[in-house]
Length: 69
Image (tube, rainbow, N blue to C red; front, side, top):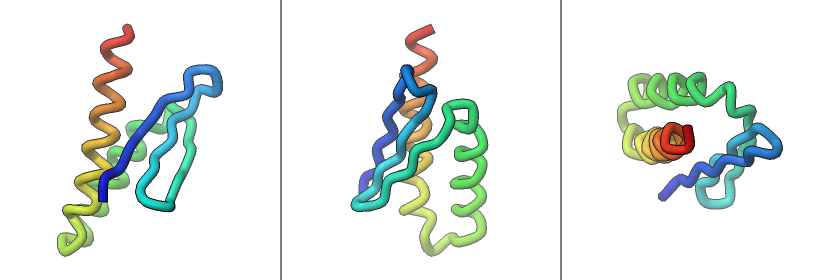
């Protein structure tokens, strides 16, 4: 299932969405979430593909933010 990550500059947050799940977090925590999902991939290799979608969405968001600088 595809994960999307969107940035809300006014609120200083990003939102991850995957299916019916949605979570909004401070943008300063972006690296923490990278670490969390990569760690999940290592801990639960049978579900690594699912977590890979989350990492991919976070990487795309980080690249978008770098492009804005």
